[in-house]
Length: 292
Ligand SMILES: [Fe+2]
Image (tube, rainbow, N blue to C red; front, side, top):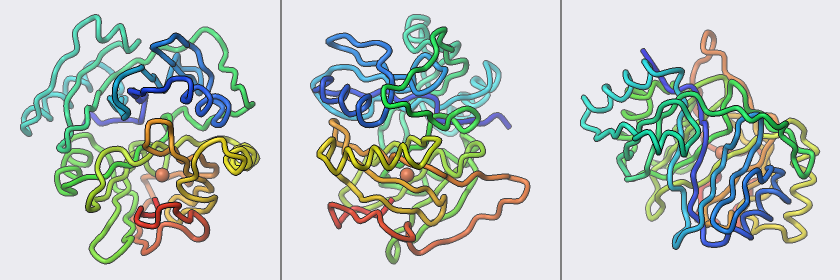
């Protein structure tokens, strides 16, 4: 069965590109490869971009780009989505070019979040140079993970597991009746996670993983000095064992910046169950938010 192989890119609409430049480059260490008054295109590895921020009148995640292996896989998954009732658009040539991919289809998830499936994201000719000396864990694990709040867990489970081919990593019961589901598409512990919580919807956070704990520590010092609003303090997750902190992006959703995430081998993996998201730390600035 054709399936998604990882998180490829994220497209964001933002009102303040200047704030995004400082946040993404100075704090996270992403490289601003394209910078115009209306556009901030950010690299984190050999790919020509991973985060594409467009100036707009609102703030939020415009599209999440999930990678598949090739054109046959793209069509197979698109047909599967259609037979399940999703309306899938085959992107026109100019849209494919704009994303710098080889093939692209688009559809909305059950909550209305735009998702894109693509294959063949362009490799850059220039070497990736981080302004903070950061190196990111990408490659086979994709660019990181997405956590999303959902109104309907069952519909998301059906979409991601049955139609897109993600596999269950584990679940965390944050509170009675409030469960987070963590799914993998490659060796990264999770590329997508979701939970239904009252009054919260859309993308909760994106996670970027760096190759050294010191990179997280130095960034945390910058956060403590005021570089970005803290969403959750430095801590260690139970399920993926990530050492990370959470900050608010200039667009309101959060970024988890971490090190040391667990890898999954499907041959031996058995999904576990947890009743807490962190062993220590990750104290939320807003206590009503779940610790994920
Ligand atoms: Fe996360």
